[in-house]
Amino acid sequence: MKSSVAVFCIGILGACSTTPNYDARFGDAVRQSRFQMTINPDAGKTLDSIAGMDGKSAKEAVGRYQGSFKEPPPVTNVINIGGSLGSGK
Image (tube, rainbow, N blue to C red; front, top):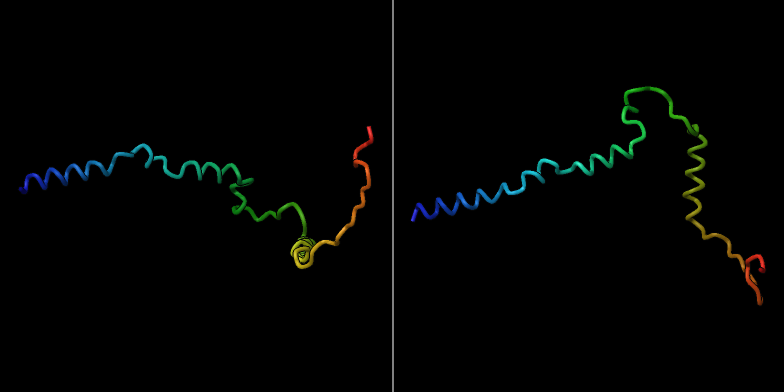
């Protein structure tokens, strides 16, 4: 009886490592995608300023962007009677 339990346990443990190839490469696709989306991987090592907007302009732009969701855009009525909006050809 003990030998059959031992054989059963060895069989179960042998099934645990059936994917060594998958496990060895687990997460590679995510790491590769993250690396490809990073413009400058060494950006944190330098103290150079980032090219672009200054802080005040960026703050105002974000404020206007967030404010655009507070009220809906104005309604525009379009009356198009018997025609298309194309060039008419």
